[in-house]
Length: 161
Image 1 (tube, one colour):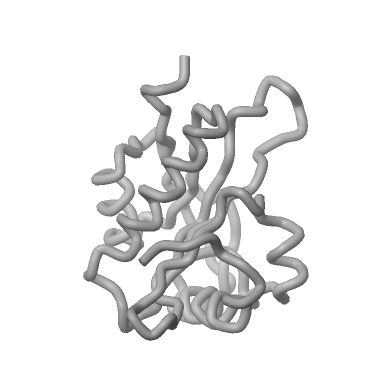
Image 2 (cartoon, rainbow, N blue to C red):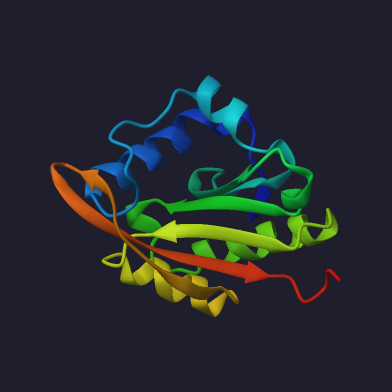
């Protein structure tokens, strides 16, 4: 079940975020933010948690504004993380669908993300969700002492003119 992500999910969301960080192919971050930092940075209307039948968080998706410039009012960047034990069960797909539905309802025309090329599972689930590869930003940043590339993806809404 996918529900709005709230402070009730904070501990599990941050733990899942840290698990993704620890695996090494999810983000340039090295430490998950506090809930207060996460809450402040993520758009409240475009963040969701996937829960199991017992109410445990299996994964989350959240979006941030790309820019305060009015030309980019319809563009957000997102992150999606799934608990290691819940992968391969459609959790990320369900979360991305919830994000697409909420952003399209709000008039947002582009969702973008940067994914390490080694994160093949994430690239595949995004492609299935209608994202396309824009290109690869080579050696865009250092991560644990080595240069990393990032594949830039976007989903342009066919519903927003």
